Length: 288
Image (cartoon, rainbow, N blue to C red; front, side):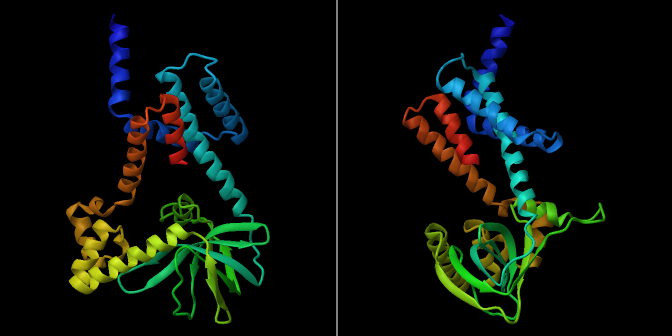
């Protein structure tokens, strides 16, 4: 009787907070992979086997079985990322001309500091931070450019274990290199490579500019930080004030947005009466 009561309580928790339960289990898988090195092929094979057995109803599935699948998915997510990053770090020499796809602007309230981008040449590609030297040109997110004389270097680890681990910080973002143009570099605009990013960024920037022009740098940057996620454009003195008051988390909107998206798709799957196992597969796809 007591065992059945505990099982019902566990099932209720899983049903009442499905997104939270899923995220916690997924993170547990990532943490396990972070401390225990596992073979990518083995984890992929085991996860594929479990999903196949569940989908074709060859074994009886329950909540504990789904828990195991989600944890394995978390392990696989980090293992794949580390395998990819390890391969990208082997790329050192770039040709005279490379194709650069802009993914993000790194800004402050007054100017663009750098760009997060994807650099491609021949059959190789890697994620990099790009610095434009001696150039006032602004590159658009979602657009592709051909740039000559780009110097790229692998981000090296810190020798001092007590300083900020910049390499690890960039690795979490999937970035392995630091690149810089020279005074002889030429930038040729090619095409829109990601229409969704390009047009959404244009709309976002237009709204941001109107807010800044209406309310000024101080108030406008706060509004942009809260509602548009442009927290890096908030002046340093204001950002420090938020940190001192212990409310800097109010500006960390990116994770909240991800949670809303996952929750939206989960509720949509319930509305469409999708089977539980298909909902789990959908959540796995969104997390990847």
